[in-house]
Image (cartoon, rainbow, N blue to C red):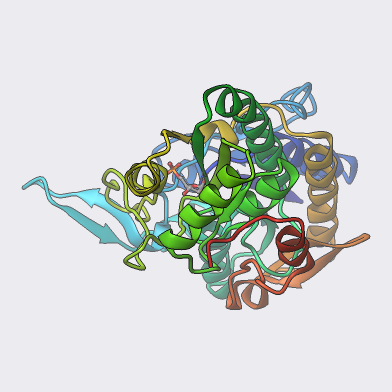
Length: 359
Ligand code: F6P
């Protein structure tokens, strides 16, 4: 058996641990393993396909990023191609991928990715490609699994930032607004905000009003707590009900969200007279060593993915359904994106201990 492994979409800490575990588990079964570089680009003649041996995956479990590299512009069904006049056109190159996979002797693939990459995997499965998925994203927004690997590391990074912001905020009696990633999901903001004991947490799932946010800040002020920490998810809607967009996406890329912290800080300063500063944590959340939790989860996912290939679970992804690793149909997992449930105990407890959601 010859299998191939690919990593697609934004990177997440733990990718290398999955690659290592899946490769070693496959080699253990006597299979050979190829690594497709940069999503599916390695099968489109734009990058290489490399052999993954035990040596090739040695000493990588603790490293961030992905040794196979990745891209969020690699959808083979809508591949951006620049035209002679400079404009961009999206073309379907999926048949090329299938033909090239065959020419490399690839019999099955392990696709490690978030909702976008898993949706691509599902479409390829429908065209007859034998694929098993592994859910990855720091956003934790893939349903069917209790958590994705990368999330715990991102939350840890955000907590460390909140801890540091606390000391400078308190010294200056300032309001610090920290913007964290998560796209349309508020998991990173919620988990880091509660663990880091923020005063206000703003997430896309709970619409908020600026008056309530300012009131939370001023109420603290009246109690003698002159500083405040606000954690806001990059996709949290602003007063007008729209999320902030930042920069420009390249052809073939999703819209980019962000910039909401700066706007919020400006408004709070205007309305309360308190000195405000904002900070965007950004890609720091995606980089660096995976936490022990993510390393173990990623390793379990890698081993389970090889097992799923052995079992012929095409169109399934591995998932954590505590305490077990199971497989679930990718189609089912993608039906409804996972979002923070406003009735969840984390939200309820946060409210009970005095955290405002601005609602
Ligand atoms: O989906 C993961 C994520 O990090 C989001 O939280 C964020 O909005 C996006 O990717 C950023 O992607 P890019 O790599 O295009 O900056």
